[in-house]
Length: 388
Length: 106
Image 1 (cartoon, rainbow over the protein chains, first blue to last red):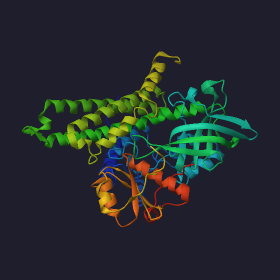
Image 2 (spheres, rainbow over the protein chains, first blue to last red):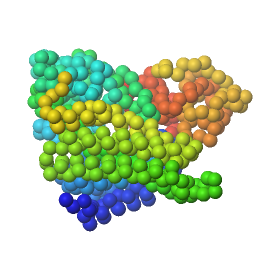
Image 3 (cartoon, helix red, strand yellow):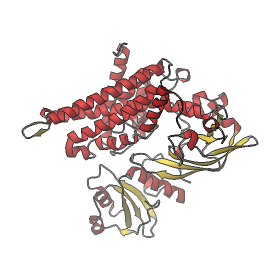
């Protein structure tokens, strides 16, 4: 097994690293420490640069105009792209573009015309609506939102919570129960328009991630045409599950990215900060923290790249993705915590990005499936069967 | 936390501003009739938090009210969305600022 980067991978990662260092980090000096958006003029200018570099729309399949970069290389890029203050949740403030909702690549031609292509052109925005007040870790059982067939329409009633971007979206992908007797085989995925009667954004949900909020949604007799069923009726769980597994790889990469930057800051600070007549770097207590950071970073990095490699080869990668997600989110939290300890009082301030990463990386142990669920996924794959 | 910022208005003058904390948070400015003219926040770049933000606005409005809040970015957007939902547009002084990508509630 060759663990070395190819010449192309090395060139690409160095290019992204330079872009973050020269274009993104300087802009953050003038932004609010909790900002999540660039000035629109800066955003458009940098997005144009990324397009010239050939990296725009990384996750868009090449047949839809994406740059045809393999998953391992995209993961290496993701490890570079989040190395700035807002990077954990907003890598490079989105100037590398996005694929929108990946599920739409599996939509039928009519749905692609109405939702996918306008999304890729930046004309429409969507949200992903899975989690409900009754729970998010076990969607097959927790989904209580119902969809009942009525003529040519489906009528949806229920609620969703912790949904990002729904208040600004034109449409959303919503999962609802269409057969109460069939568990995970009774869930259907719908594309819903947010301007339809019966669609309500009930409230903003404020969290530790103070730069951006989630929303709580309510559906009251929301009518959705049968043509807006995504995939097969009662086939929604597979759509949700596939998305969750794939998303765990870039999710892990962003945590590593922040950890790498926190470690870099810690080493630099330890080498110049003096206490009791010598630099912090000379103290064994500090040395051990830096070594422990490096072990956490390297472990996370190799697990995540291993998951990306299997996904790239179209081999089953659910266990690898779950392991990468579990380790990188927990290890990333430890690295940021140690970095704050090394920086002392300054580590607690908004002068440095550490306090923002500390808040945001804590969410990562819950988002996209908490650590405990990742262990359940791996146990199922290792032992077999489905646990109740 | 209440959805609406409905605390009593305080006259916007130096003496009152001097008494408010130097913490992060959100604030509203109003005219003499109590109509909201501006919604703002004191973020991590504010030298003395709410106090310095409101001091800089002294003379720009009749009165103010504030809320200490570490989630100042999301609370700020929430207050703007609530105002736009109730009045159909942003407060007068916010309209002169660069447009924000706001969502809708309701």
